[in-house]
Amino acid sequence: MAVVRLDALRKVYPNGYVAVADASVEIASGELLVLVGPSGCGKTTLLRMIAGLESISAGTLLIDGRVVNELPPKDRDIAMVFQNYALYPHMSVAENLGFGLRLRGMDRAAVDRRVREVAQLLELEPLLDARPGAMSGGQQQRVALGRALVRDPKVFLLDEPLSNLDARLRLHMRVEIARLHRRLGTTMIYVTHDQIEAMTLGQRIVVMDRGVIQQIDTPMNLYRRPANRFVAGFLGSPAMNFLSGTVRIDTTTELVGPHGTLALPGVAWPADWAGREVVIGVRPEDLHPVDAAGPAALSARVDVVEPVGNEVFLNLRSGEKPLVVRLPPRVVPQPGDLIHLVPDPAMLHVFDARDGARLEP
Image (cartoon, rainbow, N blue to C red; front, side):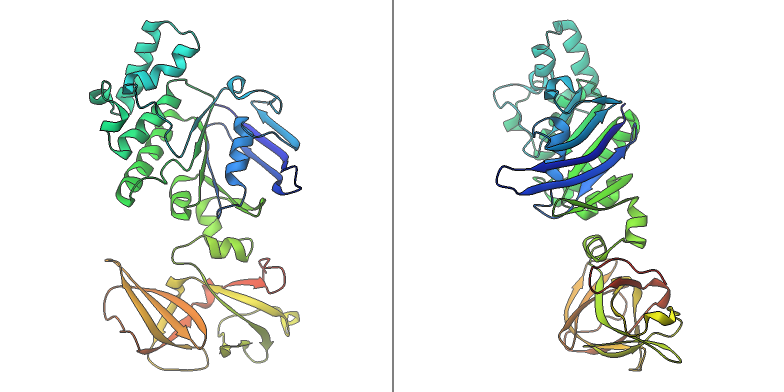
């Protein structure tokens, strides 16, 4: 296990493009940290910098207190699992697992012993003589994990390892990786664009956008207290709803915007917010249907109904504004129906309309 510390890491390409801007985070020994964000946000570049596959333009990278900026990958005591598995098709599973150890000059008996240990851990023993082409995607992914595990490195780096699997296998392998991490207690840094994967795997999550770290926190803190509008909109499925407008404070608090005037009973914002341009965020589960229209309700027309078994997602239009509501599968409105919704005042998120930063009353 190892502590990994990034101090203002920066990656700038020769054309001036800043792929990673001053990334700073400390990954605790034995922690599973997830880097998440949309395509092009810099998460894979940052992982490759840690691995030594990308040069560092500025900043300091330390593994167990040792600066490794200039060390080649083989001297960093890390192991990386790639998106495409990168297995040797002409080798058996046993040969794939032991290949890296043989390259390092380990004797055959020690290699065989270590391969057997890892195969047992990953339930690959029946497949040791098989070749990758005869295995499923999930089995190949376990072999790729095993090839990293046999080395017993200080740090595991995983670059979107589940993205090539179907939904059922992704769910299964997600559980396997979480179980494996709990059993090994090894430091892991995991890259994904899938926010559900990030939320379910990460002990902490680093949310990135356009090369900049937006927030670092536990999954539930990110969900409940997003630092800005980007994080709020990125984490959560379905995504958070946003309503923009101007704050009006009289006997009640109101939001005046393109949707009309929405009264917010039970909301007490500072008096100096009056006249301020804000964006209100409300999760789909925090919009509740009511029987009739009123000053505290949004009226919306049902556009598309998505039943997913234990819940239903309603895609709505309130004027030109799209909204999504999460409901239990009881009496479900039909496309074309007009419904009225009241946001839970205790669950509102407020962001500055100019820079998207979270505002605290």
